[in-house]
Image (tube, rainbow, N blue to C red; front, side):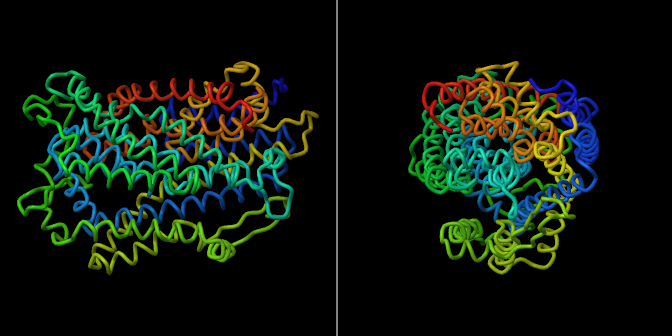
Length: 590
């Protein structure tokens, strides 16, 4: 067991994050700089990391966080470009025209459309985008938030074109500096027979997709059951049971291409392609008349709704596209579809930007010559401040750059005016700014904690911060540790509001703990990635954002209590499956 003093020092940054964010409800922009300062102090006292090493590790962390921010900014910019051009209303109207049944809308707009948005943009955008669309269709805002938060859990692990895995694990947790041997974890991965860290992370993605595909079979049903039980006039799950055939069909239409993409194309595309294929298949099936319920289900009369279901935004009459229909805007007002956007846009034209994104991502990631050329254009800083740490930012290769390019193409494609273009940039900047400070200091904190394993140690103990914590966890939990891996990842996302940050905070910890208990590292780290998705359902940041756009600020407690139902279901069954994979199904995995 690690030295108790070092364990306590290693716990300090994580304890500070938990207390400040969960107990004192401080924002991440204030919490993360404090956690960084505590981590730096602990590393200086317990591991002899001097000011130069601390500064070098912190700058490397900030540079890595900047890569994440570029991706997220590009994704959000494209999202708001489509919103300003009217494409999202066209897409939404196309799906809502298939059925007025709220259960069918939950499948199409939350489970499938929400998963697509998560795969394309990540970082809590589905609930903030899908929620207002549902309210525009006449849903109670409280029901819209609860269902929207639940429905896209399978996609969160691969959100923003694989950022949680590719950046969180490949570029932070198991990273190799260009001019040094790499971290101890990197060396262990090499010894495990993987030709590169990318190959190891791709395998993590396969097992994460497998866990999601199996456990996620119930998610479409759970979303509908929560809607009918807590927001239906009959307060029963019976209307949800009637939809089990469509739920299973939608799950299969999404999960099969999702898992196949993880196996054959890696962690970039599973959510994006799985949701896109699922949307097409399910929409065409419903249009042909299959799986449509005999009787349409709806919420009870508006006058029967409790006050806490509706806040400052009154549910609309729909967004079918007729000039008289109203849609709820993000700022809480209402405007006619005709006044807001181009009513003549076709469904194909509305979808073209995301088709272009998928094509560009495939070309730049699958064709070796293109990949090598673009990835070779970097802003590189070797031996930062004379330390062993180095980092580079592939300006052209990052998905965020491709998102920005497609957004610019969309201006002409959708005939946007200067006002709409300006508003899309304003919204994107406004949404990304709060994440800048939080991510810079969060990743810098993890870099310090990670590199204590390579620093001079005054006490003679060779364990770094995260290794000391993993040894303690392994001592306490023993062989059943894999069961708790998902819950640890969920806790990380709950306090940080991000699957990516959860992976960065706890990825190496889970890896080291798996080594300590003799469990397959690839499966335990995959469970961490799944857990990061679970925690997003109750992350305060995500809940507040979702409630804000539907005018229900102040109802966070009600939403979180309801979201604990899918969180507990997912955490328990993901834990059981992780144990089975670790010790029964593939015990020989690395």
